[in-house]
Length: 479
Length: 144
Image (cartoon, rainbow over all chains, first blue to last red; front, top):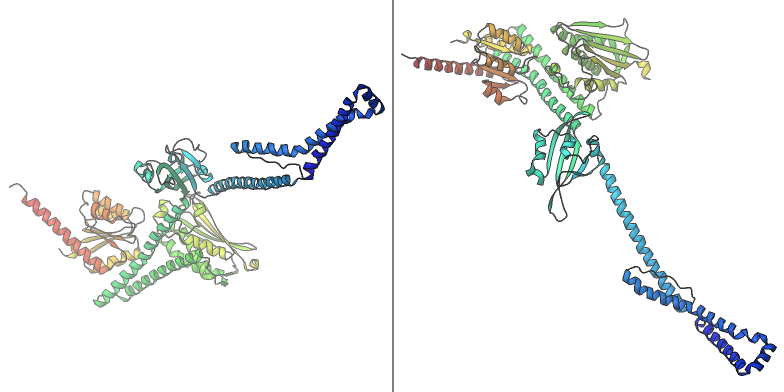
């Protein structure tokens, strides 16, 4: 209060004294006045100075009031424009301190609201960017098309599937290179199906070769549930899945054949023999022996197939184990050759075996290595025409032993060679398809050799023949 | 007609199965020829008159169903009764074999040899009856 009331009061008193002094000089008349002024010349500017001081004091003391009034007028105007900005007043008076606190509180609220707004905007932007990042990191291609079928959004995977084609040029099916004449693709083009979900697997020819796309198209509905002609598309490359499925189906088919054939022989021979004995037919002992041998051999064939299937299953779950023991390598090779020689004799094939004069003993699972070699030599004979050549060559090196199995058979194409060790894989070559097989043998052989710390490799030339090489570490090299 | 006068062709690449079929057919009184492939079978068909052919579906080279189609297209052989053995029944288009190629029966492996003998007998009887009926019709429709 004193800051506001005492100063103008003093100023008024000073002004009154100044006015009184001026009046006295004027009343004294010019003579006295000049005498007074001559005697006290400092009386002349005194009233003016005092008056100036009074005005200055009045202005100084009233500035906070004026500023407050001005701001209050501004409040009315600013509230109309919704742009309220208040500033603290430079005064220590109680009412101004109150005003300043009010301004501070309002500013803090405004600042908080501003911060919240900026934070909300930042969050929204973040969500949008995050959403876009999530969509772009999807392994599936995702696109949105408008009523005219034009692409309005495509994530990075979809752009990759479009292989550089401009997403604004043409409809999505055409851009994806889907053959419209294909039965499944025609479901996407059916106008009746635009209002419901459609999912199809369609083949397409792309720069990377032939592949299969699984396309799911879903009508995009607004929140009000009104149907629109916009669609969300999800596209996934399912080529590997389709190939695996096809290989599995082929395996089931081949395995069925491989199981039924020995079973048919067993049933036919057993029943024929039983009938002959029951009817007291003249089935001589030699023939009975022959029948029993055939039954025995077919049972072994079945058993081998079941072992292969169980081994391949163990291989898939990583539980294929080895029973490693010191093995006479020469004995192992001779037993193997004895097993496959009849196959080659049936086809009049020449079998050449080149073994070093002295062979070391090996630390291997005898049965599984024998199974591997029988598989490789059996394949060599199976895919080599009548009168062809099959060769077995052993190469001893310091750290390992190489077993080369070469044939003059139909060979394997360059595109198929990298896949021959895959489970269930069978060549598309009709000469291979005409032979029975499950696609298990080479996959199993590869895994068995790998488990021994060795390596199975293949070289081949179509129509010239193939060479499979088994590299097995020698005992001193394994430790 | 006794079974001895009937000549059966067995087309089977599995030597053991060929052997057991030959044995059973011979014990039933048929005359038998076994071919290991469709090509070999075709050579036999061109030189001998068979009453029935039992063909395995899965053969090296030309498949059993292709051989059946070839037989049906041949003027002299198109009426011959055919039976098919298969270890791949799932893959086979059985309806097509039965209707289009007029295969009398598709027999999945494994099978009972005695059942096969019974089916062969039934098939031959049915065929001979049909042939007799056909020739009777042809005789009655001849102009007097």
